[in-house]
Image (tube, rainbow, N blue to C red; front, side, top):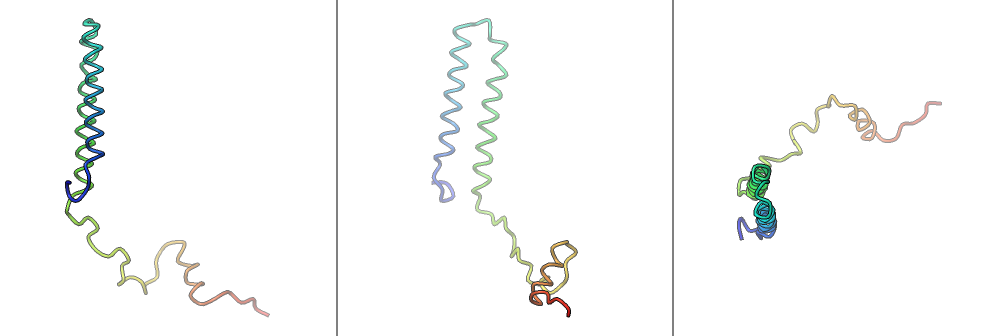
Length: 100
C-alpha cells in the first residue's frame, strides 16, 4: 500500500497500457508497412500512463493541501460584497413583516 491506499487504479492503468502497446505491436508486426504510422501511438499510450500515474501519486501525497480552516472565522461578522449577503442579513433578523 502506498500512502495508505491500495494501488488497484494504478495497476489497471499500467495493465491496460501494456495491453494497448501489445495490440499496437501486433498490428505493426502483422503489417510492417504501418511502422511509421503507429509510432506516435506508442508515445500517446506511454505519456497517458505516465500522466495518470503522476495524478495518482499527487492525489495521495502526505502533504496537507487544505492549509487551514476554510470557514474564515475572522470574517464572519463582516459584511460581504456578494449578492447573497443581502438575503443572509434578512434571515438573521427574522422574516420580513409587512407594514400596516
